[in-house]
Length: 257
Image (cartoon, rainbow, N blue to C red; front, side, top):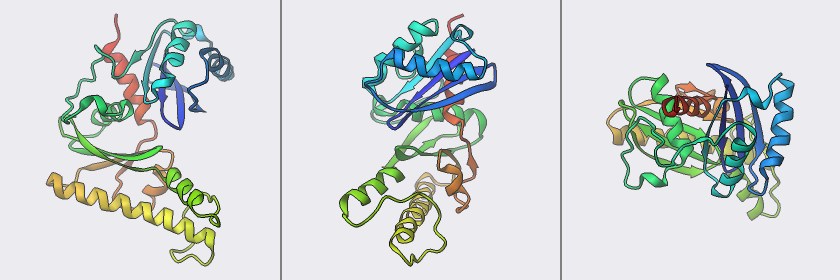
């Protein structure tokens, strides 16, 4: 079985694949102070609920965008799951797709993993919209090449900034308001955030299409993808397991037999 780790700025996701079957997926808040042993206690207890034990794991793969967490996650794999992980972005780890930007080393590992997974499943040129800590738009060529992208503030970051900057504005849930024109502070804030992001999504995707020469197929991932997809025709597919599938594919391509 394979342990796949997607370590982001807000959450770290651990998933176990048995062949092509996803046996378990668990999420923890990102905290670079967490030790390998703390991760192990938490993860092995959750695995046990699915009838899994550490010795079931025969390989690990990781994408990490939090440098301070690298040591703990690598040590977790080496100490409890049989060996160091295949780590996206490290020398010798092949992605199998060209990267056509000025500074390839600056692209987040998760964005490249998404490109690998999306090209494998969808045909033609693509745009991947990832609703994470930041909202990212990544353009993938028809041959799978990473062409570049756009980074916008994430929706939760935007809502926190609004709350922190204005003394009388509360924290509100991310949800579609009953109408566009809010009749009170909370629905007015929800409308600004929700419909503001619909406008951002549609506007950026439209401009990508104009600059690229045609409108690529749009694949959305991340926890809020389904909610936004329901309100716009600009998103064609929602793929919640995109990053995990990409990690699995990269492990298979780099596994030492």
